[in-house]
Length: 282
Image 1: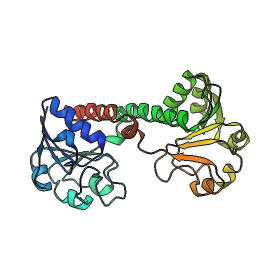
Image 2: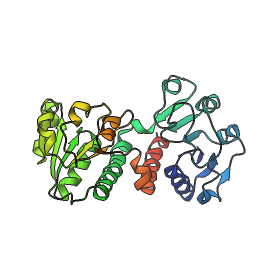
Image 3: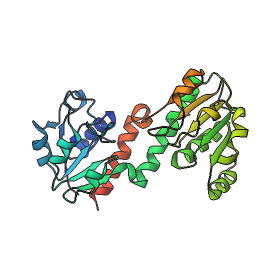
């Protein structure tokens, strides 16, 4: 296994990742992480080019960028552009997340989009689900036990959050469109709701947790929910809620993005580390 790694930018998960890999015996060189005091004992590259040349594998922010232009570097004053990073990566192996086509189609860069890897996505869903439940407990004035909770979308996160909610005594309803998913929902002991039947059920829910990155909860459907409902949207941009309309009508809505890095940065870093080790062994 390659024992050198260059780590460029990233949030608290990446800071913890750098520490873990150094403890595992890796020669770690960092760039655009100078504000992370925890990494003071690690080697720092003087320039982006120098840092990249130190290693075959380059790890950077996950996701790479919020706007497609600037690399996420919250622990640095450096404003590193995606294009600048791209220009220095030829002949290297890049590990990041949400890599656009300019990276994926560049035959001079071997790309690993960690967010597309099943082993990482499943583990990451655990932290997301726990974070969602933590927010629900903090923001909803009643116990989750006995509450009517709708989980919209029965993908990785939907499956795990539904199981956790059932374990604490919530009345769990799950929305899906595919008949196999609806069958599994029933088999697991939740109440299945087909998307086409969603409207008639919306008034009964105390909490709605959405995982679908399409605006399912539009103005029409928001007019059907209870005024004291709590809506947690876990979906990536553009989300699944008409946030402006919800705000105008005092419907409590929380768009909870990037929960693993916020609620469980060490566990999230472990998931990234383990996935990277799988990549290095290929």
